[in-house]
Amino acid sequence: MRVKKLLHTRMRVSDMDQTIRFYTEVLGLQVLDRKTSPRGSHLAFLAVPNSEELIELCSFPPSGPVKVQEDLVHLAFEVENLDEAMAQLAAQGVRITDGPTRSASGSRFLFIDAPDGYEVELIERPPGTALV
Image (cartoon, rainbow, N blue to C red; front, side, top):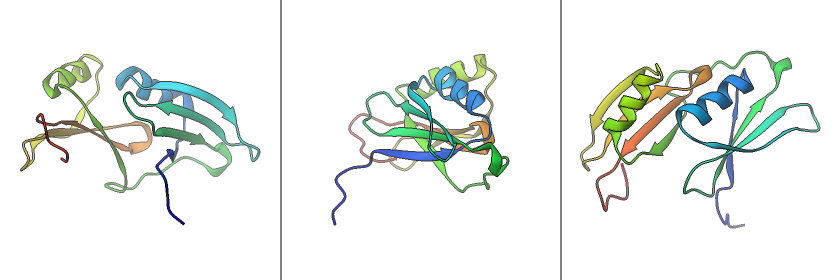
């Protein structure tokens, strides 16, 4: 077997509407579809600008609230200008939990928390830089 490409990543969330508001209003992602799975999970598929891969949010209330361990998983998004991103986060009352920090490659990054404690990394990369 050979994998062709990544299609989506699923994250379980406690409050679907709160989480969708975060990803759409704070990060500008777009909801492509919402549905209920055959086993009763509430699903939402989010599109990320300039990316084919989707984020699938899954809420399954019978399993109880989500408890994300610290430093377990995070999503990383590239931003054009980290200073502008920080100003927009401040205007929306979103707290920066770590950073901004500059990496050896010259990238700058920071972390914020999504609902349920999932970390979100925002990265500004210098032109021509392929990695963090």
